Length: 164
Image (cartoon, rainbow, N blue to C red):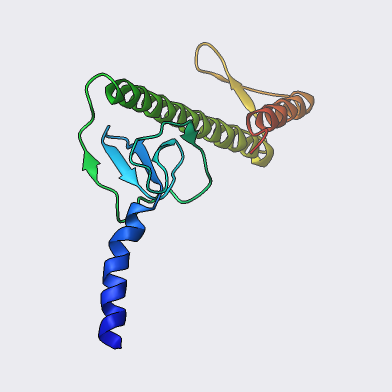
């Protein structure tokens, strides 16, 4: 009985793979991958045992991005997938560049905020505030001028740190 069940399972397993949907996608390196798991941007090429490939709109799903165990590398055909692979590669490069710009802008804004906070905190903690003249001499501000300087530093800090 066990032997018959084992033989039935072993003969059924290859047939179940033949009945699965097949999705085609291109990874970041331009390799074409085939999988039974849909990933964002994948194209449905085979449906439940149909022998002829079926072309459809790219699959967009929130399922996991991992490739299944049936994924394999297959060389791309000249002309057809090379263009889409190049387009995908170019889009990935643009997205990476956009993320790099966003990171640089965020880092620069954080540095500007920190610098403005330091200037403001120094002006609040200082008993006397002075301006440096063109010849390098120090000219101390009056109390009213110091209050106005601290207020200007506070407004500059609030502007630099807005949204953080």
